[in-house]
Image (cartoon, rainbow, N blue to C red; front, side, top):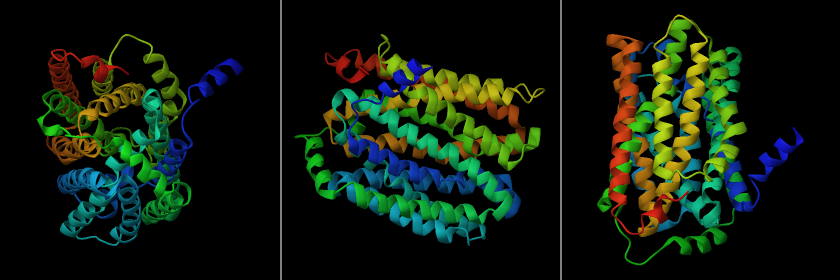
Length: 409
């Protein structure tokens, strides 16, 4: 057991203090994201909004994510990631404190559009900051540490959130989200000095940068990633409704089940990433592996005669997430060397933002009209198409003499 613990801690060795601080800021921020897994239930049960209307609210959520990611990428290249992240955290915190008072359907759509625009404006900045604070050989592990912080926060958050709903009500989650965003901003001001960030910014600006939209292998990859994200994101909207409707699982237990996802990531992801980096598979091949696990998780949910299938599905989905997302991000990092990182990572985050527009709406509409089994078939089919586009990206890259420099993990 001691040897296992030493090996686990060894996987974190060599990461810079700035990466640790950035991960802590991310943890504080994501710990407060308690409302997201319960948003569809809150809108349905507390405000009486139908599944069809919830789908449109989530579309507004996705549109805000697209706008925020695009603006964040552009602003990061112009202003530097420090200012962009700080402004995003501060104004997101303020917006969480008033959005809970909105109850009319169209105002809810507008409010969540503004909220998520501000929240996702900081995402490209986080990726660029992580790249600037990491040595080239540590970038995948630095990203994994950041993801560990995200998942630890988002795993613990819903568990605490489920308890808070039962004792304090849904509005307490909005207060928690707002306050933790403001705390994350305060922590950033205190531990990451802007002068250090400005010096690091110089390292990621190159001459004659290439536009990511003109990079065909990257575009193919981003399309595949967007479809992958569309298959993954319903875990925050459709899956909680499924737990509730099919198995009558309480909010607290829903939070606990989602917490299993975070627990497995905290325990397994860093050692698994270190192990996979020693294998012969490249970044795109590993991303495809993660996509396949995600598709299998939804196929498992077709079996509704045993509640234990919920556990099997969340484990499969977690392995898909642990393998797919870190190596997809590493490929984006590597490819961004031919252009400005803000623009490349902005397009990377836009893949998730565009997925937010369609994933929740289409999935909820399918549930409302055809039931849960049909949506699981739809989401698993998306993973097949995602694999195809990633294969096209790999095929295009194989024609380039320097392909290995972008594919190596």
